[in-house]
Length: 173
Length: 237
Image (tube, rainbow over all chains, first blue to last red; front, side, top):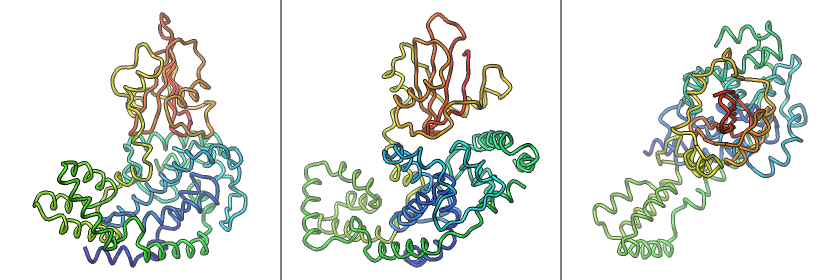
């Protein structure tokens, strides 16, 4: 227990360094808005600090961070403020923030047009290189559901980007 | 090709300023040990001891125990106090110690525990059966609704099954059965005098069935998620 306590207290910088990319970009892929992603980023790591969770291993910690990020964005989507401002934030991906987005090919734009449930599995699969099994565990969904979501996302991406662009997607799934 | 381009688009590193700011907040949070979890001062400890003794004696200790456990206390330690008949002063000492321990994040909790804590309204979602009873339908759909089963049952090539071409493609939070129903009406293209709404909590999917009495095969099932996005429509069940 002592070792675990020390670990939780001492690894702030290490955890931030290791998972900042995961949390921020997952939040960005869900919110489509850099400012919202920053807010969620801070909320997630503060929850990490105050949560009474003893992580069994790094995979457990990673899955926990993914779940909390997803939950935080869900909470944001459900907030009255967001519902009243959603129409204004739909196309703000290319605006502001220190985070630079290079989407010359329009790939990110196409992903952002996918329904939210498709977007998250696409992001975890193609950006985080997570397996279907790991995504299924992190999102608490059945593997078959994750596969279905990925397949349908692929279909919509194919429509938006063309068959050639998306051919490697078919192969990977 | 797709994966490389997608990664390239997001290749910019996360702002150092954001990381520094967050690290500072985490440090601050650590040193403060979070007010609700911090060790209790002596006066409050005595107060807690008195209150604890009272609830134990009046037989509602178990209620408080459950409540406190929900708030993050270590059930094993509380159970030990209860089981061994330890004095309330000693019990509260452990109680305070446990609070201190909690501040350092030693408690074990599953991701699911935290899921409910982070998104508590999830627990308030009505069961599919109760929704069906409260929403209009004279003949609620029997059994448990599973979106996974629906996905397995309805293939893209099946007649009357649609996985795209929906009106609800932008996000609009759906938090209860009435909002799900209103959202689903945007997709409805059949005449109906019956509606039933059910919810698959595991997959976070609502199913709204529009049908009309006496019209066989004229129903429409709309499946949408809590972001108001339609995933599947099935006609003619």
